[in-house]
Image (cartoon, rainbow, N blue to C red; front, top):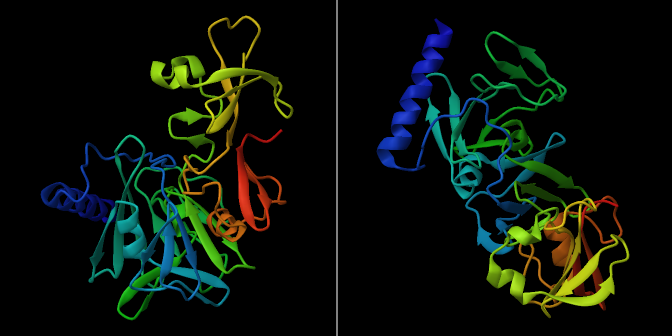
Amino acid sequence: MESTVKGFIVLTFILILVGFQVIPAQAVDNTCEKTTGGISISMKIDSNDVLVNGASITLENAPFFRNGIAYVPLKEIVDLCGGMTQYFPAKKSVMIALKNENDYVCFSEIWIGKSKLFRPGDDLPEYNFNEDPIKREFVFPINKYYMPIIQNNRTFVPADYFSRFGYADVNWNAERKRIIMSDDNTLRVGNLKIFGDFELLDEDIKKRFKNTGRIGEDFPGEVYSDGDMELILKKETPSEKDSLKIMKIVLLNEKHSTPRGLKVGDSVDRYMDLYGVSKYEYPNFVQIEENDGRITKIIIQPLA
């Protein structure tokens, strides 16, 4: 009976989504692998000012820290991610819909004042929680306060619920009191992706880059440049005559930015706000060189 009710709620929510066209729902995906929509949100505790892909916006409700947990306003963050929420007063539950990379809608349900999460037909990654395989409900025993709450007539959730939804990686920087939530692909700049095949790019992109005659240091390969950035290109195997893999991307000036909106010329503080790490921290896929607190070069590469 309970599964029938849940199915009805999900169906009702789908109709809401389609009817109001909040999300262009092509289909419902009950597997909902981690999304890659390319959004990064950096929030500071007790501040309404947030960075979304590097752009400054203002939230109506600021994140806060309580009982060892960083809370964020659920609806505002879901809205920023292009999703939708629906509150069901009788159950004191909230249904959340977020799109994955294939534009499929992924559903989750949470309950105010209860440490559990429901995702229909999904197998979540391993976390420190208990699972009821029949009800598909996941109970989090991490902290007795670890649950959605109401404050100022708004629903707040622990920030890392968004990783439980399967939507984003969530990191907490205690020193800077920042929550950094990201579903971006860090190892790219525009259409240029680490491990991507350079030969499959558009011809106008390939023509921009010229062989400098130099060999890369960290990742041996030929260095190509268009004056604004450098690429280290390497054949993945000696037999691949027409395949050049991008092994490293280096931004030389402010013309291009990382997926999180970082550019050459930005401050080191901005780098730490967007990535939550210092330039000396390891492992880190996006590294910088700086002079007098300003970024002079941005290096994007896989771990050596």
